[in-house]
Length: 253
Image (cartoon, rainbow, N blue to C red):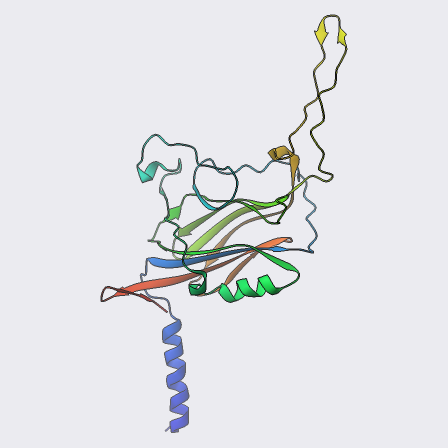
């Protein structure tokens, strides 16, 4: 027969396992997403660094401080928000930062000399089986001057597990950042006007280059911290299932 001390240890282990198991069939989750920049990291050797980054035409802004807005749609029906059937529009109402599990990581990044916290958001949303969000658009400055931006989108899908599909680009103004030159005068030959060279405004998409891109579709287990890494930046993801009992919302383990 096991001793009293051994029984206490076994009971503690069972209670720990019970509280760590996700609630079966839970559809309501708290979502936490944290975006950070590595300040001293080297960019990738990309074959097409000057290819313009195209943001989704439709979706909802997750982290957007630019002039991006979704294309207008013909009807207010939620099912027509995206051209892809089955995509749904989440309601992103940010929770207080102090209530989020990733707050400790956010504080650590803010206090670390080699990192910069770019964006940090958490909200609650139902994710029933088969649910897939429209693109959650990201177009946010990653530095104080606004010369560096993280651009792209995220999508969340629930199959057997939750999945996060990331398509993000760390873009910079081309160096050196040239001013728009005046249009030069060209001679007219045989009555034909020679074509003028194209001058790009510094904030046009073609004036930016991609230092790093993050393209990944990752399966996410609830109550585990997941990292999606690129050489110059990273994304931290956390999901927590929430169950409703007796009319009160309680976090399921």
